[in-house]
Length: 221
Image (cartoon, rainbow, N blue to C red; front, side, top):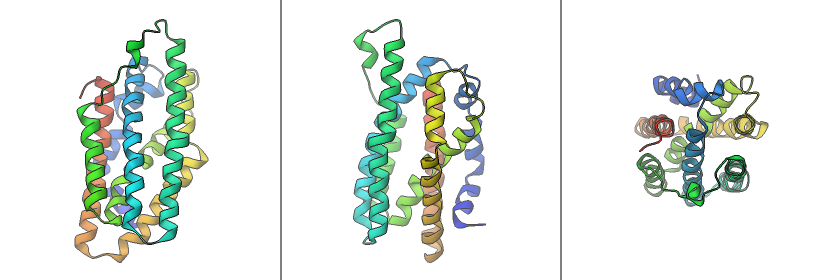
């Protein structure tokens, strides 16, 4: 078992709760109420804005030019592709809605969103590069597995289908493979205390991912 697989196995209970969450299940059957999906997109758009800052600051923790280039690549993909995909979905859903009231665009990040992003930024400021990679890994990794699970199920709803296609894409596969490869390279080189910190950050991020889906499904903090 690789080091990355060990991290995942340690958080397997939370991981399975994410993959079987009501939000995911209802999205797979295309019965998820659209207002929950829109609420999720807005919260996640804010999250990604903060996540991009997290990636930018993470570069300061390494002198390895290849790792700096990798973090730069993730930053550019987040800003130019992932956040852009969300904007397009939100715009299309707003234009296709029966009401074009500007209040539809009012936005306030929920407590869960703020807590998750604060945890990421605190890890970026105070943690090692090993810890930073560990805390960021569950987000893209769980999304890939969710999208793989839904890729053959979501057929009719165009917004849900585009979302699934984005996160099950070749690019998403590549990003997750790179994150796992870096974890497998960094983890075995550190002592047991550092490994424990990496495992703890990975586990906490998994919990935040689960809480994010809970927040989105219930449309509340």
